[in-house]
Image (tube, rainbow, N blue to C red; front, side):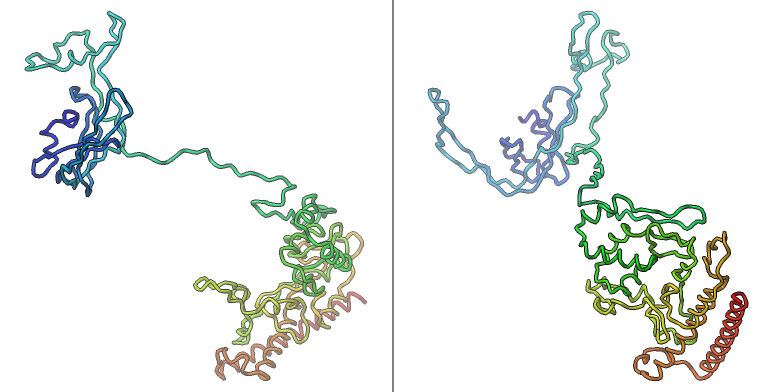
Length: 455
């Protein structure tokens, strides 16, 4: 054992005091040294100490606290299984232990198949000289092959616990399964064109989702009845006007089975009943979408919230919901516009039929009927050019008047708003009044032109 470790001299080099007291080879393959070794010095163990090409196994020293015991065990030849401890004696104190837990490098033996005999023979004695060698290495016999093994074969002697596995493949569950890795609603999102036909029926998967997700038939019938009475809805108006107490996720599964969704055009952002083509029906003009944006005039618009801020649900620092409006207060609001409306958000979408203003409804009625063969416009639909701008001006005038009245009647509601100086107020009022007069003249001119066309 001492020879495999390099002898007493090599083992003593590991110790600072060059003293080797005792060694024991345990059953776990560890050398316990009763000495104070150098911290970073590794002990080499060569299984073939007589071969210079032997790759050593390295043992790392670690501090330990233990006792070296000398145990005498009696055995009997007649009874091979007999064991009896006759004496136990403490031989010393163990303060450092060397564990050979690293991998041993590959071994390459100087053995070759000789052409003369055809057998594999070890030529170590011919390659490595014994004693004093006075010959040149180039003068060796030609029958002896060259043997130049590398210094090491393995890149590292540490154990790698990484296990290679096959890449995971995403399993696509069948339609019959109710669990899906990716939520699918199978809705038809239809782009607006003048030639492509509208969808007539829903996808089979959308109909199947109603049964697989266990949707209440009463909820489905309520949505179908709403689309029979009115062929085009926005999701917000559908819930608020019909007073539907349906979960948003449930409604998202019902809508694809009843209607298709327009992604652009005059009816963008609306759900249209299957088979109904608004391009062929002049009365569909009242279902077109109007995007209304509250303009920044003075500080009047500051009492209207921004939607992306008002819909914040979670405070990421405290992990608590911080919605300004409770869930029971969010129902049945911001879907229609009338004389007393102040929009809940600065940007909101209305359908023309949900704008309950006498002036705008009269403008809708006075739009001339198109001649036979006339198609609607890709941007304005069945409405004339700049019709939406006139409606926005009328609505903005009403919103500003309602905000002023609110500030006069309830000054504490708007106390958080920034105060505007008198000079700025006069300038704002002049701009607003001039803006209102221009709107009235422009609106009256549009109404007169519509009267002339209808006459």
